[in-house]
Image 1 (cartoon, rainbow, N blue to C red):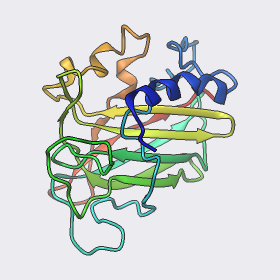
Image 2: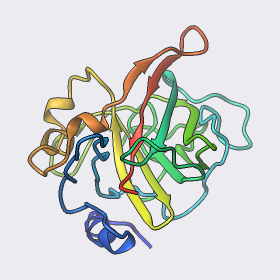
Image 3: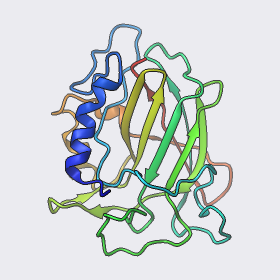
Length: 220
């Protein structure tokens, strides 16, 4: 079935039913000694409801193919924790994103930008025993969305740990479209903390690769 924007909104509205205390309807208060919870978002119109999905944490290659995806290679690291900073090991994560031209591998994406045959842009994985993750991918491009604005580069995360679920989007620092992005620019007005969804520059393992780190705090 097609996954429409209406389905995305309805899916987000259902998230509180999937957790003991989701916080999806507003920003969770940050108590002394507690980390701020990463801002909740909708699934979006391009959630990968159908396969294929990858499991290789090097997304610069399409599963089973030899070619390399176009665009700037990035290394993304981070930890998934609770509000006290305790690691959340074995958290199930689905990550999905557009390619370097701003196109998703999804049947409802009508962006005329080209599909990259060497980029799937969807992966399922679990966090390590210390709550950490490390992957390699392509920096996503900006793309037009139905209201007429252009979405700033971002990566989607869907995380599930025990009874708690968090759907969020990660943004890059210093992007010119950040201030006008339809979601990022309205986070504060929607009672989410914008600082929790912007990754930070980090060292990369080799020249020519950009490094970023993105820690995710779940209401667990």
